[in-house]
Image (tube, rainbow, N blue to C red; front, side, top):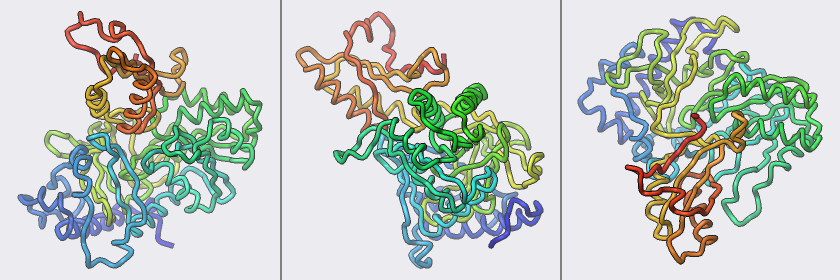
Length: 447
């Protein structure tokens, strides 16, 4: 058993991080296409540890999205576990195509360690039964796959609901009612999924009179959750007679994995600071912000072999605390909210989408005369209800409306991975020509 880095003295942890950073830079110099080019004018010998990391340039998120293969480490002389691809998960790409994140056997074992620590921090153990409520998506979703990794790491059981929109003709995806019955059938103790969907499962369980007495925790992620939403979920769990009403709000990304709260409403611990380093930076200068100040989050992989990212701008604004946690005493860094996402990309139904790619795709469809994309809640009167993506469309004259609607739905799902609700409307209702500019994208959730 390796020592728990979260319990090490700060100076000892920093020495480990410094050594791993030097080794990671050496590997990138040998076999990382993007950094070999980006670092041509950097004195890499001057980067001897975390204190010098500011000397490395920041990595824009879009650079990895546009050229994901350039971020894959290529060192053919490494041992097999460090070269063999174990799995590929995806995040959003700049063109609408999903961006692959390559994980070697080495990286997968690192994820097992990360998830074991997440489970320890959150209080998930070998007596738990995890209901995986993440959707089965068109490209492998990190959260869906890692629900099994979480269970493996701590000895828990896991069962998947296999929800989501159909993406192949095999009849695999199941309706929400099946998710409710799965929780009942397996006596699940932990509901794991996108925040608003887990809440919707709780509502549907009430409507069906389902037995959720075994449930003690909702482990949610994928989208921001307000205190009011979490309070509402706790209310639903109480009314269902659940064994507990813990809301474990996980933060993370496909590129890095999940961070964990040691108690509700607390900061997010980095479970493996020996594998991943977080800093808050000024995106204009690349300099770290003073301790406790808010800025743009950048992550650095300290011990990876597949897709490797150094000072990678995640796209969120946070602050960081590095003192021992006042609740559990763990060290390492903690992300302090509220988490504010930059406007470059947008989360819908827990998935990061690129609105620009979707608008370009719909604009290019010959059968579409006018259109508008709207993100709203399924119940506009309920601020905690699930996201819904609507496409209002006006077909060109003579085009069959049902066929155009089906084509628009398919094009939208293919472009951003979310299936919309398409409504056929008069073109004047969408854009009357009197506005200076057609409003093509509306996010009503912010109103």
